[in-house]
Image 1: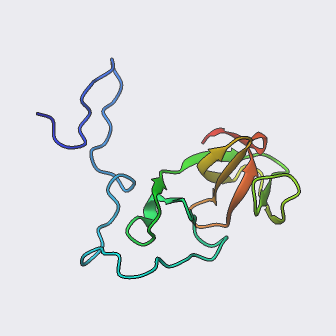
Image 2: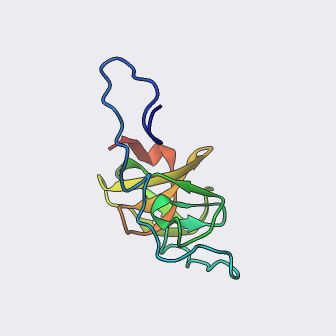
Length: 133
């Protein structure tokens, strides 16, 4: 019997996945988690959390239906961060060329995520991002 989280199948010479890392095993919170009242809301643009999704590092601090592991992408020259995923949305920031944008969700032609590990949060057109970093 494989331990919990151990890969069941091995594919050729592919390295085995780590059994414990900061994304699959975030730091434990002290005490018991319980729904004792309404969930706190995060100020848009400050934390990678929205009503339906949050960065995995926020598990245990914000209650949402889904948590996502970031997918790092490279920002192309001229990319802008928007408040919503559509053309004409308010511009939050001009993103620096070559910076890392951590994608947490993709819907249509838009990616939602965070600039770096602790930067601003918003939407970027997929054509303004390059593949994985």
